[in-house]
Image 1 (cartoon, rainbow, N blue to C red):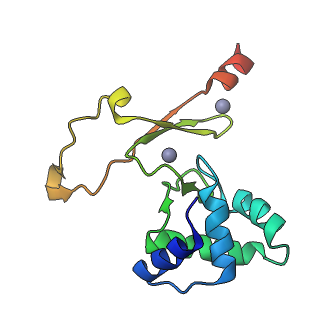
Image 2: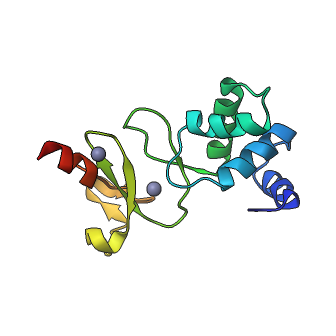
Length: 142
Ligand SMILES: [Zn+2]
Ligand SMILES: [Zn+2]
């Protein structure tokens, strides 16, 4: 977990104002893994700042993601998720329970990445979603 002074520095770098709520939110998010939704973050933050509202948490998570402090996961699975893994990676998404698991580039065989694609499309980054059934959901099926 980062020290409060680092959060101030981070806010200065990303040009957002430091508030107590943002600092607590940031600290709570630092301690989370995977791809939490704003609701999951809210549940944790509430324990420390009971007066905080879900709307405030939403607003500040969006601010964190827009300013680049946290990365946004691709959002076409419904709700917004925050990406806690800063390494380049892709996702295995279960079509049944919607669980999301990180997967490395090597395993997908995506190590040779082209910077330009057909029509001159310039690649910023690759984010591949592999859709399927997780181990738990496979057991339910059989
Ligand atoms: Zn599943
Ligand atoms: Zn991820």
